[in-house]
Image (cartoon, rainbow, N blue to C red):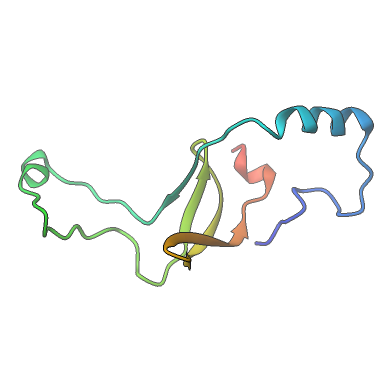
Length: 101
């Protein structure tokens, strides 16, 4: 699903009040989190972890990663490298209607 328009047609007019409210909010910090997978461990297993331990996650290596903003799933993407850092290329965006469920 590539809902890049936020649920509105790209050519839909935006009222001045909505535009002003958006300008007020666009500098608010949000926390973006990317989840590659998860697993459940017993406390015994957790305490037994060492520097060379490998933890198997519940996701296949070729699956997309979940991208969250403030704990809400907003889309999925794939890992890319940006210079010496990791990045995420967004490949799917969740529609605003599905985000509020």
